[in-house]
Image (cartoon, rainbow, N blue to C red; front, side, top):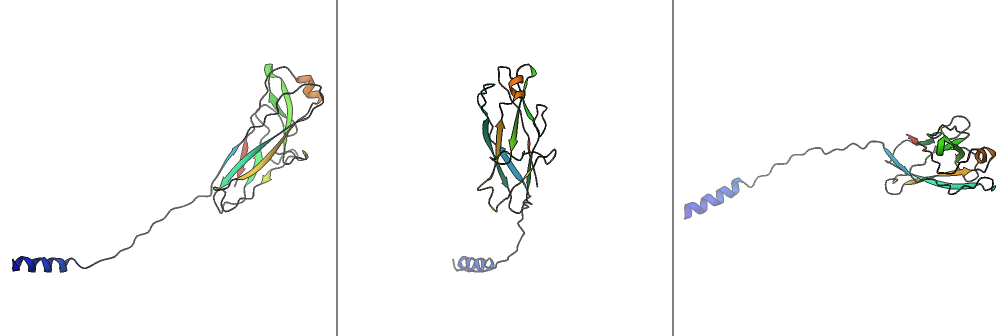
Length: 166
């Protein structure tokens, strides 16, 4: 028994040493952004009633901290319009004119920087993945002679693409 106890004491002492080492842990965070938008619905249009229809959208933007200041641009839409006269496509190929603006004063067309339109610079904070930055888009649909002439009963739509460059 004494021999066994001595072996246990010596065995324990032989394992009492320590060694240390270190290693690197890393990750790379890319400058990236995400965005989503709400739809614009002008509601019901009654040709000739003289009413200007207005509706808004909000584009929600999230970017990593340190992302260069992004610029937001909107295209002319998918229905063959221009920056001056965006078009919604309806029944039988009929089109109605509308436009999108950078503010509720409806003076600056929100576009891609061409044909008199303007883009919007987005101020990204350090926590936009926690609190997204919201950019408002102001839509206006006029009871114009062109819209009164073109209006056929039915639903009209367009798809606008927003591009964030950073």
